[in-house]
Length: 330
Image 1: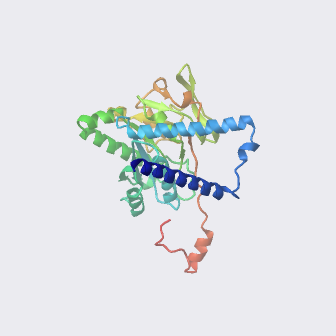
Image 2: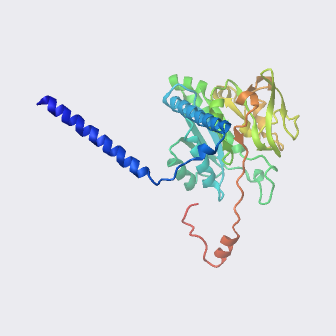
Image 3: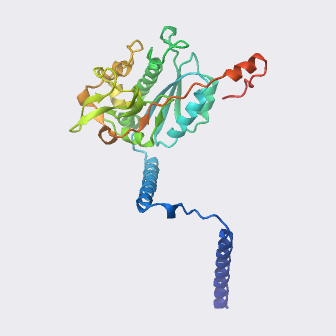
């Protein structure tokens, strides 16, 4: 009796699987075949397979990293200010950060108090964050029509982020203090574009790590030039004799180094192009810089800018009392 029951069960399972297979085969009839692979050359197919393999390897590496609790944390300081594209910029940036394990976002608004837009945005972001604010003095603010390079931007906000880190570091004890010793600080503007690989490059920084930045300074890229593993000069088109002729997106700093160097701050009165140097010259010399991104031969961050929206039609409708609903957040 038991043997018959087993044979019956096996028959039912076999019949069910066969039936499902037949249904699936019938469903595929008439479906359009993706035959793009047949039209590709052998070299193209190999290249495509290599790309897919690299994506899979990066995904596995990120997944494994996310499970670890002993990897250095990255503190990202981002200055931001109110404008029409602010929420769009922050949304794009937050979606990048969501893929970076062990990241703490320090958002510093250029405002007298935290705004509701940024407060709500951060609360819904899914990220670990700290929300600060620091108003730029009126005499240091760019006026309407001023070129973006006329005055240093974000100095007060970055310094506020550094102040918070130093206060946190002073209060830390035990395991928390030990974890801060390994952490890294990066200054990420809200309008740049970042490769995920960049954050893994910077994660293990002893003092100051550096790499190229694309689409900056009127050039395809600026970068430190490396010889025998050391930075010897900088590839830049404007005033290469500056102490550190680099973009803000082109370096990261050990938090331990920041905590032990309280005089390291950004000079809000620095002349054009010297804001980065005003901070870095307190920390390192050129010989101390740690080249990343395959000895500074790969571009992993781009100095992109969002075009300012033209609101001519909106302005015309506003004059007619038909403007967009002000309660709808953009």
